[in-house]
Image (cartoon, rainbow, N blue to C red; front, side, top):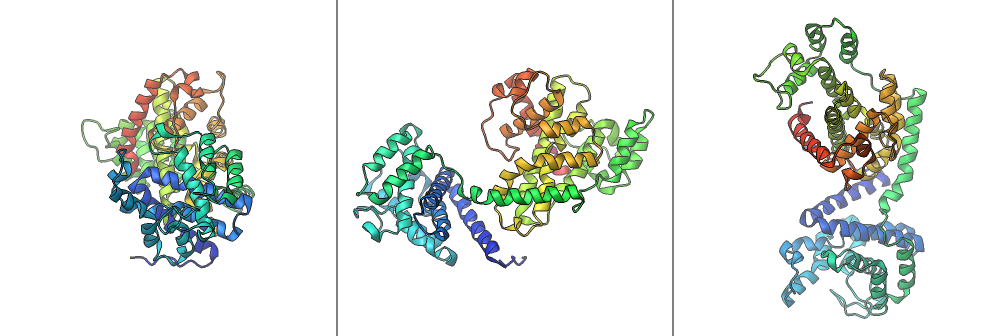
Length: 490
């Protein structure tokens, strides 16, 4: 068993704390995904409110944020069927549910760095008039953080209840909370609370994301500047790929010549044969050589697969905490590559292998930024979720620069520049439209960093390409099958 790194400074210790908090949140999510989203909204609202109105000391804002994330961790001890029951609960069952603040305090009690969080977790269901639980505290005896948390916890339960048909509007929820001022809630907090909620339209902005975004953007700008000035050398395309590209352009090149080039790299050779034998490409018999793989795949598809194998090495890291994000980016790139190719085939476009390569490289700037970012001391103290969210903004310039260095033509650079556009016209070139649609398709089928509902009939690239939603759905299912069959072979 490897020895974990000991935090060497305050930034590393903070990241260590948030890694533990993230593990506990995963435990909550495993019990009840609804509860995790509720906790994240409550935590962000509490922290943003306290920071904006100076409710507590600035150095304590993070404490209430963590308390918000973990305030319901005691619920993991409650049977899931009891949580989801719509029928009235017995008195005994209500007592069990009302013990969750005490259970939460007990679960977190052995973590010395969460000592300040414990009173907020234990008392977030106390009421100002003493009618709350578990200790019937009154007024100022209730910790201030717990009073704030109680407000936002109630608001979220009213606006986002488990039973969506019982949801109140923001306005109605505020009326109900205001009606309990002085009884359940601290009257001294109510007016600022109402103003805050109304000014934010009831939306919860991710507190930690906002705190770290400025730092991440600054680091990304510095990395881009270093690449442009030559202080950081970008990776080079492997020699075998460059030789293959030259050979394929020659009209009289043969599979035998191509095989000789590929066989100089044992790793690429082995993976190429494995992929040629996968269900995606498999023929009647199993093959055992590069020479036999090439006719099965075709010259251009062989080049695509070799480029993909070579690119896979870009997505490898020794930094364990970044590995999941790297893996997600790789699967996204591969899914976009096959999606682009299948969309091009459905449209009967020429040179469908070109679309595969465009899909594969459209986000390559993200991985280069991420790899360099992992080496910075500042980057090691920032959350993975925040880093992933901010990659989107900076990756185009990096990708454009790399593809130019690799000798890709203007068509590929154009795709890099515009695959994330939101508006297109009938004059937009098909390469951009195809990769854009494939990119959106990966969001629908779960191979993207983005989680959102994608309606194909409303996507402008799909409209211009005149592909019906059911056609795109079918392509998505095919991509899912391909990824399951070959992603692990590259």
